[in-house]
Amino acid sequence: MCDFVDSIINYFCLLSVMGISTIGVREIARCKSDKRQLSNVFSSLVTIVLVSTIIISVVLVVSIFTIEEFYANRQLLYVGALKLVFNSLLVEWFFAGTENFKYITIRSTIIRIIYVLLVFLFVNESEDYYIYYCLTVGTIVLNAVVNFVYSCSYVRFSIRGISCKEYIKPFLIFGIYGVFTSLYTTFNVIYLGLVSSDSEVGFYSTATKLDRIILALFTAFTGVMMPRMASLASSGNREDFNALYVKSIQMLFSYSFPLICFCSIFADQIVNVIAGPGYEQSVVCLRIALPLIFIIGFEQVQIFQILIPLKKDNAVLLNSMIGGLVGLLLNFIIVPHYQSAGSSIVWLVSEISVLLLSQHVVYKSCKFAFPYRMLGKYVAISLPVLMLLFLLHKYQVFAGFTMYFSLLLLLPYYIFVEIRYMRNQIIIDVLGKICSKIKM
Image 1 (cartoon, rainbow, N blue to C red):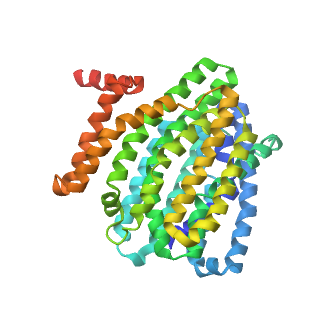
Image 2 (tube, helix red, strand yellow; image 1 turned 120 degrees about the vertical axis):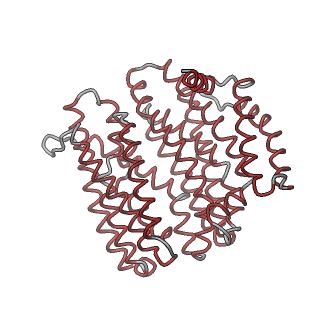
Image 3 (cartoon, rainbow, N blue to C red; image 1 turned 90 degrees about the vertical axis):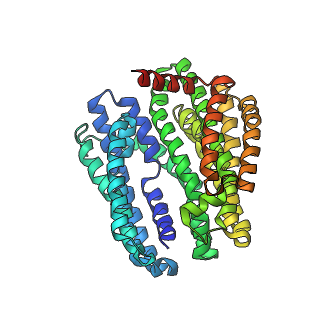
């Protein structure tokens, strides 16, 4: 139930903030050295978001009293309305744009620890879902309050002399991009809940939870890279711009392939650890969605590190529109018949279409071809370990410890391959720094 309601609220949040997370990072990164202009840009963007949030909040209230499924869950939706309001004041884009990632990490860690402790203290049974959702929304409220107060140390919010007009178009473009993207992400859960049961939503949400956690780690990397790429693009430094792109691709391959191999073999045990017994149907959904770790990661590099910094806003919008339409169409065709597994298929096919389109635009803009040779190498080096993991899992060689032992085998294998055959300079540099600190 919480997943269904939160998906609805997330959709309204998406409509209220539109493209602020993208346009905010880009514009703040471009003017971070000029404090006066920084305050002006910050105030302009916050004003746009606040106006948009007021409008969408009214739409949410009307929807609660006019849509039967919403009215049945009105108590949770009222709590979710707080998330909608405070999400507009989150201003995470400001700290990302100024590359103040240390603050983001410290604040997120502290609040997450508090959240986990409160969940363990107050959520003990399935009937405590209302408390659980209140605590979840509470993290957004607390993050927003802390962020906005702390931002005042760098900028001064004022509606005097602001210039909103120049930001409205990209705000809407990237917002529409988010809306179309949600047709095969957020809308998947909502539509699945409407045409099936809560249990099917649970199967799909459980399966995709792991994908989203893994992707969140790589998204954090692209989030760090985007303001830097925007600065390099604005200064015309194409040499460093191209070098960072190549490093991002190398990072993606070395990050995604070991995870895909491991999770595809041990999907049943992973689901059991995450959700416990009764969620066996999530295994199929998880295996369908696992390639998205690489696919979405590659998209993020193309869109957030190439197209957005180069201001290819219209191309980004077109990609999302086509991907969204593919997702919407497939939702209506596949999900009523295949339910949770169908939702995973919709997500996978939609992302593939976006990947192909974005790669086409990137090649036309920068002549960056898809790294087929690198892909072939990683497939070749992954096959032996994939077969070994399959045999270990099938025969449960180490009984209940097979999954953990396999993970211990996987990590040194890929590290050795990265250093010896792939000559991955990122891995070599990281290990070199670790070794030097150990010697000290």
